[in-house]
Length: 365
Image (cartoon, rainbow, N blue to C red; front, side, top):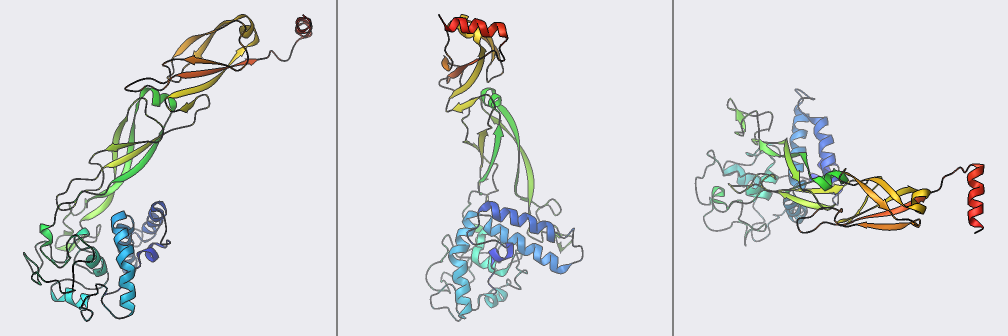
């Protein structure tokens, strides 16, 4: 059974970030998609291999398991041994699978994935013994003993021990995304339409994996594809920048009847040319005339929420004076923040000759 180097398949380093892995996956699927390479069997096999690689490296749980045991598999395979250790180093896993109705070439597993994938992940990615076409309808084909010695090195049930259909239900993978809103939207609340990609039943075969007794060409027999989904998310007024919202049930579907994962939406408040947000408080600058600074007055001021108020300027206001407008910061369920306005005096430049004389006379007093 050939070791599958999923990092090499996607052309990324082993310490690549999730973003880098997703970017590489998208580029390769566009290049090798069957619709672009019609009739090219090699491109179809490559496309299938790319999807298998991303199914592993795009899932933190599977990636961790692959990183832990996949490299060990490769090392033992190079030495001609069995990656599971114990007293079973003479067992050829691929031959064993063939004997019980599974196995095959690296892209010919019963699940539509490579035999390496099916053995390493078992129920996480489909089973050679599950469904209605396997040789066993219940119990382990090996009885209660583990032919590989010791317990299951991967935890959570051996891919050979017990009926995979009796596996415990597990929650689907959570998804993460982000969006940006304006300061005005942070004040009033808003709704964002978020588009995510998640595993869904193949629309061509209805999730069956086959069509007219032949493997489905859209999902390659897996019955699952990644499809975009649009979700309307209500963002409440007063949300802090960087806040992470949970949208329950909008993550990846669960396994064996388990509940869907959740979607986590990070909300960022975009930079604004007028207002700066600091927690629940908001700060800004307001330019006023020299006349209003000297003699006082009233200035129309547009608040972050978009409403206009008359801001009273005291007589003799100094340049840089900071005014506190209580309760006009970001709203909150418990309390509202404050709005701080720094008054900046604008000089009447350029001065006329008459104004210059008046200011000089004023300076001499």
